[in-house]
Length: 310
Image 1 (cartoon, rainbow, N blue to C red):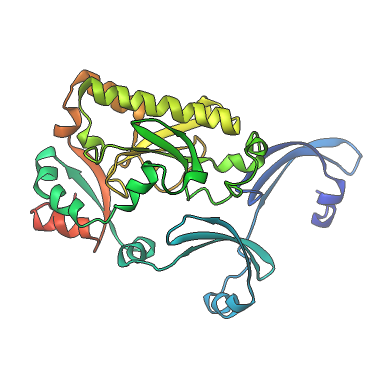
Image 2: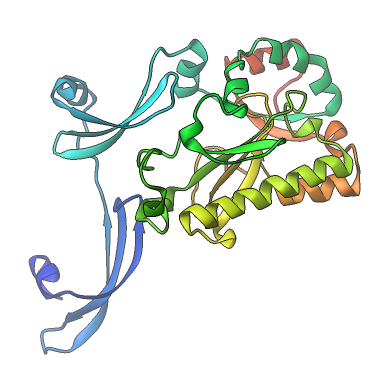
């Protein structure tokens, strides 16, 4: 065994097996010579450690951070490239932040719910009325966020999701986007224009199945046409419950494990279309499972409706 300090100087790389999270997790394949000079196969795995392990120190150093704007949603969300504490950071700012947004960022207990169509019908109308989603009309009507748009027709639009924080400014030359390294974090969003379609429970029969197929196909086309990402590398899904109640589909890379990819929340559009063709009112009646945070409005509505958590 060589002394540890000699590993890097004698290591000859032959392949990069992993380069995840823009270099936060890296696996290299190569060889390291033994004491007799014989090269032997070697694997080097690098995982970045936190630049700061003290909460107090982190907060105290905030005034010394430098920020550069990378994305702005046009509303309360903005993203920055930041440097501080000897490291680089992706910084998300939500301002002004609503109570709901604060709750979503605050760690809390999660409960699994098995929701019947009957239970959904008891509370959903009152719940949706409490959400302010008027801003969506201007987005789907191409009045705002036009620079993020990749496709639109009379049924839906496809935009660059604001959660894709590594995306360069949408106003930059789109030719440079094709095959760029940051497409590893691809995140697109398709939003329907019909306000009566609030979630997958409002989809019905062949009309609903055809809409699923069209949204899936156009998301695939956009990913391939604009970014050079093959359809086989995409996961295209609805969330249930969704973050906002205008039917929308998420499109991410298959290797991306992020909030919303959980088995109880993600519903692949291909599967949804199949179920609707098998039974036209499948999602009106189906029992759907999802997790809910303790203390959020949906959690309280379920308790009021007499629904115990699993």
